[in-house]
Image 1 (cartoon, rainbow, N blue to C red):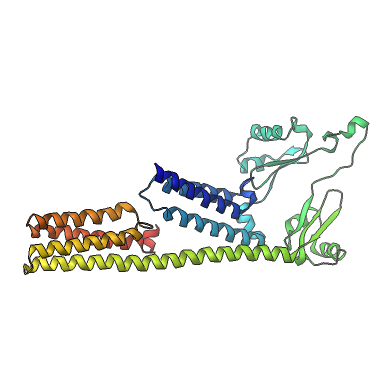
Image 2 (cartoon, rainbow, N blue to C red; image 1 turned 90 degrees about the horizontal axis):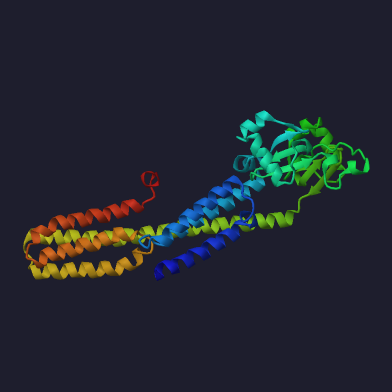
Length: 358
């Protein structure tokens, strides 16, 4: 019980740090790739908390790997609009100028009832009041009501508001949105003229939009802050990957040396039994030495290898010693061979190979 309690505290701290490094958005609305990573982290964290036979590092290392993956995808999303569309998708218009787009509704697997439910969640109870309804990439529905149906309704004062339309992003992170340009009936040449007024170029623009009234908005990138954030995330990603690679190399080297050494000792013991030239008391003494050496090595191996696998070696050595103590050394040979096989299985299981990955 106490072991599980301590493990839970350690995993909690690790997951808390990981979630903080992933950013505040993880606490709010999730993008698809963020949701997948969050679910996987929850699952990975639960295994070592409940099963003391699984080394705690078997949960921590994959969680750190997912953190590195998340930071890498985040950097790529910032750099590339195309990758952002793949990992996050793009907003979809469900209601356009007061009319439900049935094809889009089917494509997004939305029913009219579900749409109405989402609208009610936005305090919109009449579909006729909706000018635009947009399904965002995080699954939320954003609503733009008709001008005369919004709070402080203009029709209460007998005012007929102008048509506003839907604002379109024309440049995002220095990338021109050609599809949106065509929707408003403009081309790149026109956009360049608008950008010149702000004494900048499309590559240096963070966001440029135009609303339904033709009002153009443009904001330049803050390169210093942006690059500093990207640099930090890139450094964290590289450090995590390097730590995992170096850790894997060190553990593989130690496992190969330690498990190989025990295999060699068991093979020597087998040859000595088959030669019948050594007294049983000497064989028992050597078996005890193998057991004591294994117990010492086991302390470090248990941090990253499954405990059940390591216990099998303990059992084999005890069986071998039992046959020797009962003066039936020949019966110990199958157990020695079984121990050698288990050790080889553990080594092969920990290797990075296509077979082990899949």
